Image (cartoon, rainbow, N blue to C red; front, side):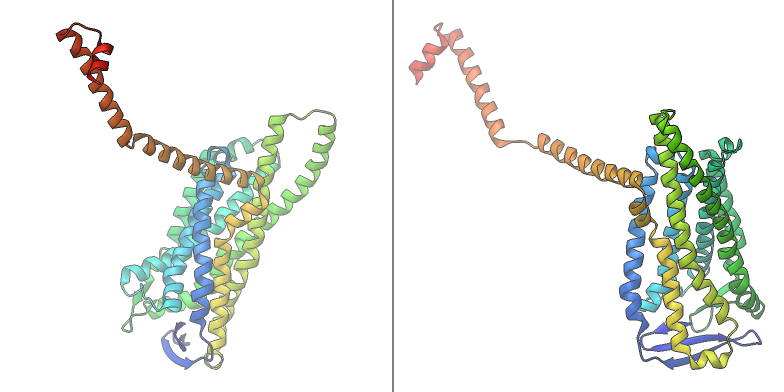
Length: 385
């Protein structure tokens, strides 16, 4: 479905797996909504994710395996927002078509699907990591490590890149310049299978199930540990270092719970909409073209909000994250101040150079007089004056 100004071009796929174009006029302009709201979401999301990358890269947080997952999640969310900007925001909001060549068409569609899957499963890995750590299992020393986290991140990236690699040969540029599935066989696979129930199961239901059970276990376990922690603290059995470590783990767990809730609430409606649209008849899609397009645009943007809001959720729910972010800002400001002070110290001064040159001439004059006249330099200087 494509939108230009007030005219909506609906690309429908018939039962014979061929595409037909249907153009209609809408009474409202969705591009205005994308220009203002969509641009705001993307800009805030890119800024927030880049700041999250810097904060989670700091020494105080990157020692935790869960922080490594959140670091990779921020990088993947950046790619999701870039793909959405190229495929949806620029074209449907500003009329800028960047998918006019085969490379951009294939790579952008691949980037959108692959990075979305990677983000969702990185969140699932973070949930499993917290679950194993809270369970006090003897295997948590092996699983909850930086090396294990990096290995699993690489495995997830490679796995879902291969799973979504069919987009690299399944899409093409047609005669009208649109980026569409290439063959009738691939249209049948993409529309009626992959973008329908396969994408819902793979992208939403499996991560949702993993995150739901892990978070339920974490909440139950933390409730019990909190009671025992309060009893031990009254008896003086806890130490300051142990309390700090548990506080970091607790806040990372709250990061996970908050981002998991956002994932479920913001991602599921768009996937359900994609599934329902494939079951609608062509007559219904023609009669409600504008409504379907507006609803799809809104739900896709809500899904992108999930990938754009993580930094702000971390800032609101985590004192340690806020503390490290403040340290990062203070480090930048101190670096700029040192740089400015260093430049000012190296900057030459006309007064100092003139005074120094005048002193040198006085010393040369006072030394030269006694060698020629043989009197007191001060006396000779006074006589000269």
